[in-house]
Image (cartoon, rainbow, N blue to C red; front, side, top):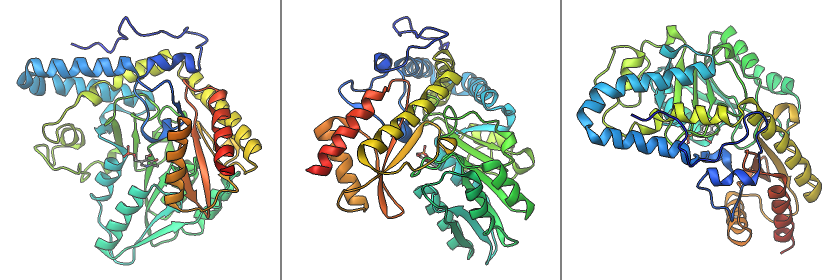
Length: 400
Ligand SMILES: Cc1ncc(COP(=O)(O)O)c(C=O)c1O
């Protein structure tokens, strides 16, 4: 059975002072010719975690019936417990889902609302989540409210004040990002959750980007529900994500796919949602082992410092402001692009494509609040030269 141990072929970083930078790239399948500055969108899974996943797949195929019926239930729970432990949660309060979108859908589609109720989020909400909220609001005749948050943002109190004005007796649900997707802001979620709870609203925290990027104690967020990805910043295989629910919110919370476990309890219901490849979930423990061995808190500190340095470098090179203060930033940073013609999505996609094709750089260009922004991720396989290369490429494309 797979052990979650690193295969002998992996390159081990020194335990106490990891030697981060491009020299670590061979630990991933990433194309070494590319400056990969978008860890945020889909993560990147190291070879050793993929190898662990493949061992699980082969173990399954050696005896599919015994595996699914005997091996899987305990192995799944062991991995859920490892992830729960990492997040400061109780194992029985956490289940696997395939991605944060599915986690959000499971919660929202388990709730019902009345006409006139308000579902609150911010203008920085992730598009797929906005759609899910809109779908729910239309179904129940409720209202979707997107509180505008100023951007750039430097002060968490401004986020609190901006949202507070929209929280009232009609607010039944707050969906709030721990780290926003288009704008890379670490929001003061615990304070916002407390405000929403004070009017009796339920709170769903979308922590898609948070595990591995920032340290957080999951129950201390004060939410009713939290969903997040292990496949982004924790290096797990694609399709490894979690949903946590406060114990008194677990009854009546259903997966997006109803299956054998209906109404048999939170864990039973989510742990079997039909025949699927569970290997990504089962290799979450191996991903956590990799994350810890590569430094854990040292990864977060390095990535935060590199994101700050990258933001300064790009802002100086391009003359555009940074999207967030260092206090509201984790391992991603945005910088406003000035002097480029157009601010719409087609322009952004065209620029992203030219950066990749002509300069070998993968980085998202995001239209937001009337401007284009470049959003860089910082990961331990990156180094400052990657961002210098990006700055030079953007200058060349701006002049072109
Ligand atoms: C805030 C936020 N929510 C949800 C998602 C969706 O994640 P997934 O594609 O894993 O469902 C993302 C992805 O980047 C995100 O940033």
